Image (cartoon, rainbow, N blue to C red; front, side, top):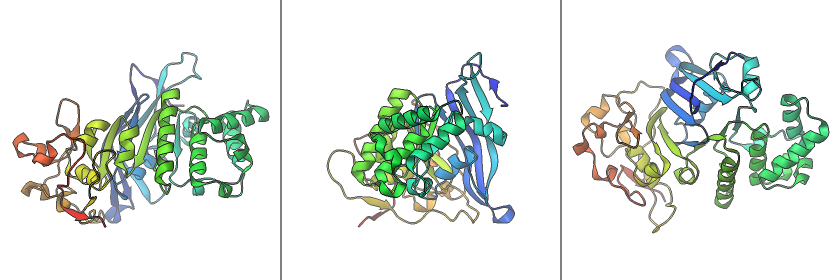
Length: 366
């Protein structure tokens, strides 16, 4: 592996100036635009945004799972991990974009794993669940006996609250929540240091969603792995994530500690997302969606990608692209011209409260 020892570095994954296109040349669509993020050791980074914002594309590209016509257009991605197989047991680093297929195989499952969006599609419909576990363990832990692999599979199911008898079942014989728990158990099979969850609660009922989020929080606390949790539901992230990055039209528009972002959003798009989600507590309120639609990324964009939908847009928002920059002592980052001058920030983006109030250009959700 082309890995090298690092000095003290608390980052598990570092993504810098990362861009992804779909297509080539004049027909290319910029799906992820110059994104810089990092995931710290034993912390959860939530990535939120509506469909098409670039959330899943980003993590698939970083982990080299992006399929054609997706193309990495620039940037770097580095994974840092505790190499227990090395005699010196130091932290090691690997450049994910230049890594060979062989090098990637050595870190997948063992250092970084991913839970895909649809568990029903991810599990082979003609194989029993036990075969899925056996294949992973046999491939990556060839020294394990068949009995040891079976024991480990049963142990993993127990971690997610499932009985050993599920190993004999086919995917169609299980509920959506059970299939998702199996995907989580598979992701933890080799004790990875980074687990990526790509909308793991999609298509599940609200009760099952909350159960899975609670189980993930308990597993993270028990084993100490880092996590990227991707979703369009900010209310899920505030319960699980340490930090949240909000993406819109391929850009990170806000990054902040989870509680700060939920109680005091500073980007108009973040405010709009929260207004369209049911509050976790307090009085019931009418849900309000964001009027309009995301921009057509196949066409050249000028200025802020959200300006056409923003009630607070300034004249320069239509022509100048705002950079993601730190705006306060907490390290919060926002890409919005409104924060260029503190006196220009509208009151809804300055207040701090238990829940946001409708302020963005809106349409009522019926």
